[in-house]
Image (cartoon, rainbow, N blue to C red; front, side, top):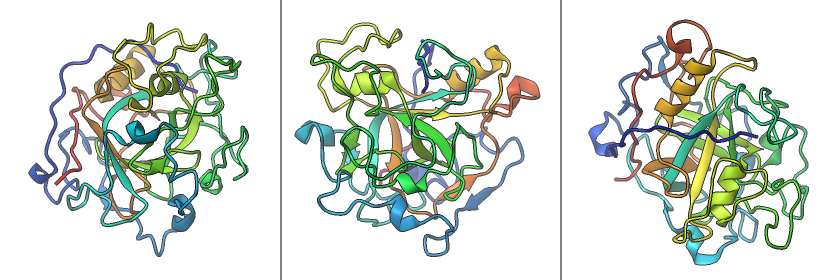
Length: 318
């Protein structure tokens, strides 16, 4: 349950997938791999120990196909943008989301059971989680969730890292004017708990298993009472179009605040309400390139952050 911080971000540069060796197998961000990690290919879907069918379950008529905000929710996505090593590879239930605000959180700034209490590794959708859902919307991918707390895995398809997004568990006290948030949806794919995400900026897989109240507010064009970061809703806000995903980094204990904040800021792309040039793949293939270097270890120079400079966006388009 992350809390957003004001980010002082330099302008980002959209880098074409065509400029990368083998699509995303090389990175637009040179710092990736500096810690000695290897670029590997995740196991093929047919041999992965994770149930690829469950991870990418988007059968016709399921919530994964439903757009909660109508046609507007399909803005900023392409069903399959192409690009070797950084695409859906023809996978029918996969979508490349564009114009995504990519932000980060960790133990220090993670909201606990109470939104304004920070310093924990709590998540909103810990295992075991029923596919029936908790607030009227099914969670078809719930079986993919193995974590009971926020975790930075290696980032392979079988060992994804925690991510947070718009969630039906927010706000804590829904009202008629501020009802429960809807799961973000674009390109015919809905980001429900247990859904796998590929972040090409860091070349790692993540799993949606936490709530992000700021993400939900931006998607719904509201500001919940618990949201102390988003300010006022811009007059230009269109519900169902602001895609914001908060990705976890770091250990399950407190670490140096300055190092963690700097790593999160340097890794972020975009801004509140305005989105950004970030792209992610939702319900991705299981065999995309993975860099095994930790994102943030909490030890060593700069906390062992994967990058010492501002990250740039990576395009998964052809």
